[in-house]
Image 1 (cartoon, rainbow, N blue to C red):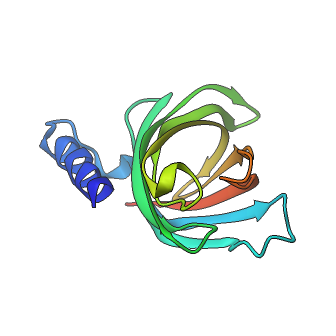
Image 2: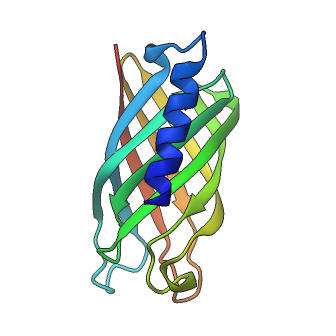
Image 3: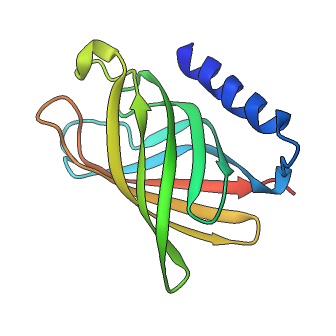
Length: 151
């Protein structure tokens, strides 16, 4: 619920700005996680709904909700910082707060900073993040997030 409130605040702040540009808004349907531990019975498909708003060439705000690898509901709010571009691929980090992982912090909110690469072409984009394992609390994966930019 808190993440949905944060998402509403994020979007309303953007909509209240005189320079809000809907073409900077990306929508995604969650993630696909290719887990390193393939024998743990983890959920690879992580459907949900998320938003990303491009603030400038290096910064984007993001928030959303999805079904995580433990089949529990998770929310996130954060920011992408991607100052480097190599062969059309943006490189940097995404940092923010997540919740909903039963084995991590009792399902409560926790901070995370992950390396991320992004490719965008026309109305489509793909974010790829490396999620490192955290003992038996969080499972490591390459996380893929397909996104669509609104016209």
